[in-house]
Image (cartoon, rainbow, N blue to C red; front, side):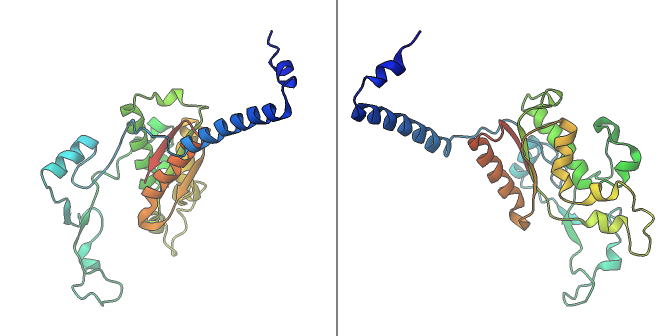
Amino acid sequence: MSNQPEQQEQLSPLKRALIALEKMQAKLDQVEKAKTEPIAVIGLGCRFPGGANSPEAYWQMLLDEVDAIREVPADRWDVEAYFDPDPSAPGKMYTRYGGFLDQVDQFDAGFFGISPREAASLDPQQRLLLEVSWEALERAGQVPGRLAGSQTGVFMGIMNHDYGKLYVSPSDLAQVDAYYASGNMLSFAAGRLSYILGLQGPSLAVDTACSSSLVAVHLAVQSLRSGECSLALAGG
């Protein structure tokens, strides 16, 4: 049995104060070190135009100097209905080109426990988020099913809500159902991922326009260093 407290009581007030200062300095050093603690990126998942659906494919596309910009695919929208070479033409677009992901209409809803009816109301951004996050965890050697109850955080940049506007037009509100809000409001994207995986760490959607993804990564790093979470999924 240690009698250290009794020994400290026998010390002079000056020595006890010195010991207290040393302990506080050690705690302060620990806090300062945590602010710059290195963060390891252990897994990646991605979807980029040009068929770059993995980090390796994306890297190869960069090495090959591939230009992934192409004319608007016919299955996205009728470019003739919206194109006008005059940049000042109201309600028109003056380009016929863009970066497009392939097969965004394909999603294995059952794999994530989502019914076909709910999947129809689900913004493709949320579908892609589930798929790519799962892939990132697999590449990181993390078993998604074992993360339930863990202090794993989710930080996702997201800003556009085009699907909700297209899915329901002001003249036809029949498509609005119990799943419409959760499928299209940006705030639900991160929460859905946390819910499906059973994660207990911070979970938030970030909208800072073009910097959303980078800010999400920044917040994830801060959360890891502060001890709010032990693992984080971050992206956009």
